Length: 348
Image (cartoon, rainbow, N blue to C red; front, side):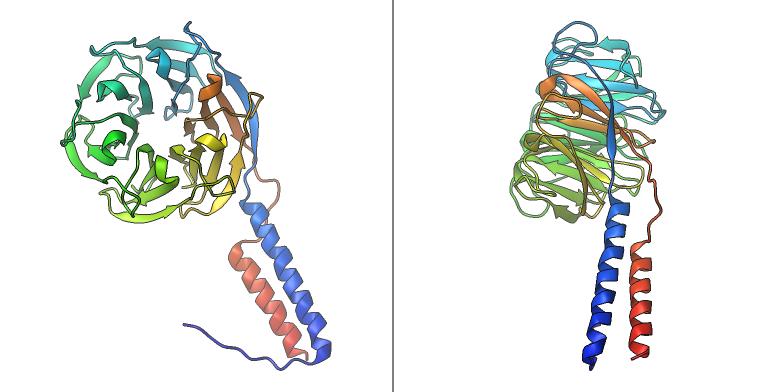
């Protein structure tokens, strides 16, 4: 419903009205500052190589439920490496091959609530499941286009029921399985329309079961229900805030904010669950807080952000700074501005 309000203003009232507008603008700025997020570089680990603890183009990173253990998909070394949250190596498993426990490019890694680890074994076209210490548990998938088959599975995510969502990049779709690999459903096809994909890469699930997909060659994020019903999308090709250049990964924090690995813009972008831009982190380079084609990211329950800085063959950790001030909410701003306007106009 739209309301039309007409005011007959005297000239002397104009400065008052302008003052109200200015006050409203200042209050709105306070709200925007309250929404802003500040991240501080904490530490980094890893260097290019094949030795224990070294990395060769890591594509993904995951954190367990306690926030104490970090798993890294050491992609070009065809292994998973396990660290403390301060970068101390705890162990590793995997080698190049097709046997159980071997890999042909570890693309994605995700940790279940119970501690089991799922790995997208991309060029073997399968998912492998392990204990937290790397003991092999199960595998499913093979090359193809049918249900439960894959063409370059890129990433995986888990919902609260333990269901596994896999971005089947070469088949331009998302597949959903139970925790044992039993096929449940799928959605997507090649294209740029709503619900279509061109090489989907990252996938994430929020607390409500909504599914977010990094639609790599469409330069956007798409949002779906847990059964693949289209909800929304955001992003377009470019380097501005909210724009994307081949998004590689997507993750959701405990507050429902969405983080995107903006691959060719060498940064991480943070959005609301509706796609409203909040903040950006990083720039191109090899210094602290800089990235070279970051592919994967993870957020722990404290809000710390871990980034697989792929081109620099390292992991970087960032800490979310606590807010130092309390600002008015959006509704409080509107109510305050309208109240002031009513008082001024009443005194005319």
